Length: 384
Image 1 (cartoon, helix red, strand yellow):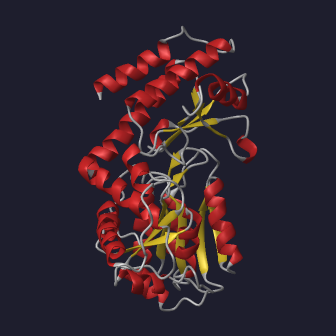
Image 2 (cartoon, rainbow, N blue to C red):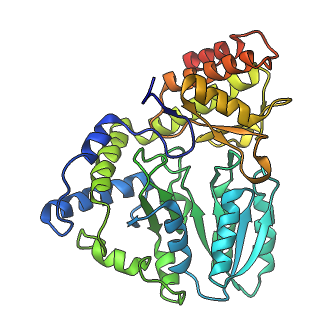
Image 3 (cartoon, rainbow, N blue to C red):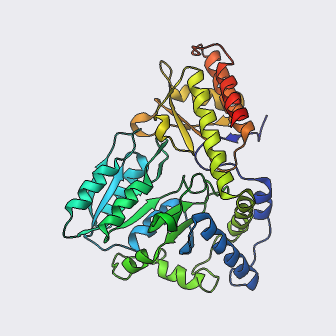
């Protein structure tokens, strides 16, 4: 049967029907009063989601555009920075930083393990001359399903006083609690196709007062990603360049849905689905790639034994039209990843665990009685 694809990947994520309906409207002028009203409403909604009174700016571009904007608007060539690297997107930070001529010191962790806040603490404390300008890291490392301790690492940055924190929260914003003002985070980058529940094409950069102070000293080249231009336009409920108008329609609809659900309910839903997925995986005899104590609420990575992870993905796609994510780089064929991010409900979790258990049984690789995994998942969902 066609057109039944169920996205259970960490992005793009499923899009609600009413959000899709909003996108189908005829575009309006991006300099019109009607569009200015949408910009005004979504700006306030974005501040609500980020739990901040600081500026949250919208860029037409992917999450990587927001990441790059965070660097070029706060730093200068030759600046000393610390980049956290424990996965594919930590590696991306390093590539962007080096592309702009920054002096990069890397704090590494094995893929599947979280970054150690004490390593950041040691380097920052040793910097008595305060030459470190930024600590740059990924909060939810999508490639491995790890959640890094952003709060603890950011606390060490605040103790340093001079450095700022630039955080990739692309798969964590809208999935777990990130109180920007309470934690004192300086720059948060995110993208529309994750917890926002809309298609790819918009990205968001939240900037603290300290980040804007750093902006005054920044000399890295920027034009389309010059956030001063976005701030100037946002103050007039506009955008400096032609924006993705219909994605703004979707953004307003999705953020309105999120406000109706409430932040705590959103966070609790993601935690509940994470636990139900993890427990179902373990009950059918599979191994979690990432220790459940530091697993991301957005995605669960699974490392099967004696079976190619890509074969599992292909069979589930063929038999059930459910799309799972594969491993990246050296993890290709070794792990698969189940997204439980954004517009996901209990039915989706039950479906993917059932499909996985059925697939392993079909392949002769299920080492537990059939039904044991889904029974555990249902028990968690009914209890939580």
